[in-house]
Image 1 (cartoon, rainbow, N blue to C red):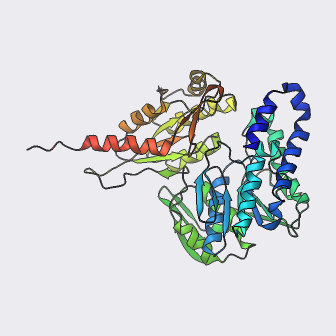
Image 2 (cartoon, rainbow, N blue to C red; image 1 turned 180 degrees about the vertical axis):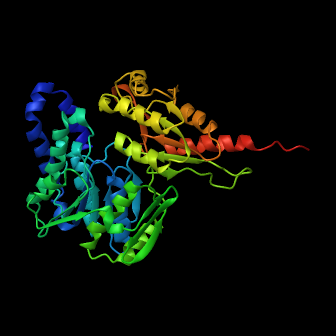
Image 3 (cartoon, rainbow, N blue to C red; image 1 turned 90 degrees about the vertical axis):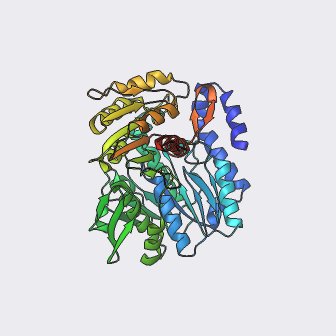
Length: 435
């Protein structure tokens, strides 16, 4: 609530003046929040995860494995917040919560006996100093690729925002601080230059031999062949990142493996939508909801389902941001999809028709169907499904709203809407009962 009130005051200050005062403003709020709640992160182990992709999934895997090993955890990511056994959806449209919310969450986790906080940290959170006065034990860096370029002004500024999270570890009061970096990422050396006590790298080779299938992953750990329901090489990398973080917490391979094998789905991440009960006619196509909202993540998702007819439902990223990637996402849909449905996503104050037109500009060979009502677009895509088709609904994942002009928002769930429209379709297949 205090974050919102201060935000309202901030909007009354002329933009040029606020830009000059912003660092002091953000630092002061971060310090005040930590002071009010007694610097709670000093009283709990904190594992943070940053990067362009895979943050939420990696935090979920880490938290699940810690729980399997009998450790009490708190969790903060794009999908949800959790303290012990209590979990609630993240409805704030922020992957990293505001300063007062975050410190209150950490304080409550400490009071309720949690031993670990596992927290997603973002570049935009770093820009607003939301990471300050959160003392980290471990920072996992999943990967770095272009995102939020317009918000940061350049790719270099975006990377620097991530590096600021790592550099802030030098202010952490924790005795042993660890940075874990993807050895296959092009920016790895810049993070490994931060002078903390432990520097660890991980890669897909840690899980070799492995195989990636649409129905799940098979990989090797501690001499065992592991099978899990998570899909895609990107999730294999997330598993490797989580394992690197948990080894230093002395989590056994058996507990880690049990946790990974038990994870049936991460909401909004390659989430398979299926009818809750058997239908009259077998469902011979797949429906997937995924958060993919960058060109790289979209391409990796499409590649996972190569060999099937892909029917793509996508928007064009949020309004007023990252317009550079819209045409590229259209080109990717054109390359991998046999049918394309372009629809509304989160236009904010930008004309949604212009956003979709920007995506369509990258499409040359598969003329898209433009259906601005997202529900209708999903329904139309499902109606086109054939045996061996996969309908990929991308861009929002677990986002709880469609964001419109002047701060308006409409409650939304891609997974719920997809299931509702799927059930309508499946029910329409049933033959009427003849007396």
